[in-house]
Amino acid sequence: MHQNKNKLVEIGRSDSDWSVLYLDKTDGHYWELTYPKSNPHGGGAPILESRTLGEVTGKYKKYVPD
Image 1 (spheres, helix red, strand yellow):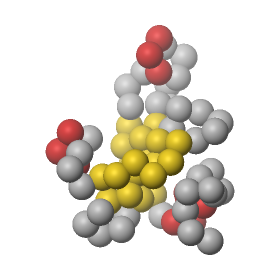
Image 2 (cartoon, one colour):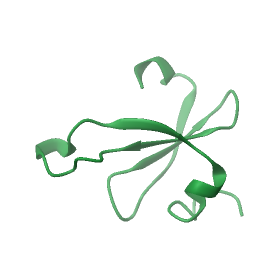
Image 3 (cartoon, helix red, strand yellow):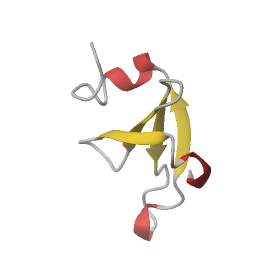
Image 4 (cartoon, helix red, strand yellow):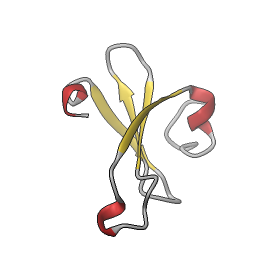
């Protein structure tokens, strides 16, 4: 995520887990930071993946447009 730090803006956090939703200021794409192996101390290695509006609407409903 370090290389994308300047163009990604945090727009929401999940109520159900440690996931964070970002918006790419340059192209309007959504990115989600997750910790899929949450059992290890500290949440394990984070993964940043591109998401569509449809994929984030349910989980981050209060942060994305209808």
